Length: 300
Image 1 (tube, one colour):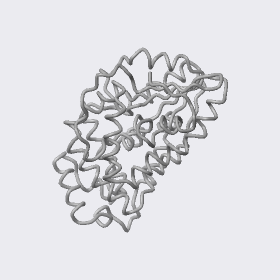
Image 2: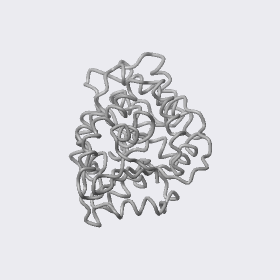
Image 3: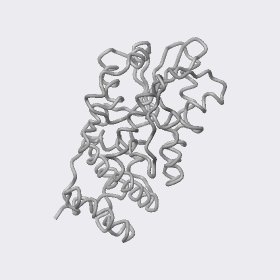
């Protein structure tokens, strides 16, 4: 008999990966800054705006600040982490589901150590989710799916994510749309963890979910006020808890994006680059990497 699958919108699964709150994070202080999670980089004859996104939000988080809307309006090119529209296509969903499954001879229980598996199944039971529907998932996908479902319970929805909001507008307004990564690459971020990395992601995700209810408001507040210091502290905690995952999901990708962003900076069209806010802050974030390369970057 085939194992039942958890049905979750593919964009939600992919985007949930990039919004799992950092493990062991402390409550972010309320910021007094009037800044936003938006930076302007001055090019030779144009500007590139770096807009930090939260991939899942609530309806009440709109309307957005005028400065964010203006950056989008002033840009001829809107760049995203990947092709958001393609996430919704049936062939993409089938590809993810295929790559998400363990071989028939394997189970989630065999992939995880007994302690981690027991913690995971206990969390499923508390959430009212049948354990058996997760058994054929790879550990990374099981963890991300649980995180996505828990965020749904908190009212967070990828349909209200900043990426989706501006991607839809870019299509309607006829803007040129660009991607920093292929969809296949992003699917690999979800499905191609090693066994050790998968277990580590499960462990840290379970810790994160325990803190989600109390820390979510502070994280969104830090994003809304452009409190880069608080966001950096959250990410630094994550790097100490799981540095291999932090490197894989954030810092390695930041480095790979840099040449493309610099290419746009040498062009003649304004560009808005909309990526997860965590990619922009900290000593290894895109903002600081560009400053080290000599570009003038000003928070808006």
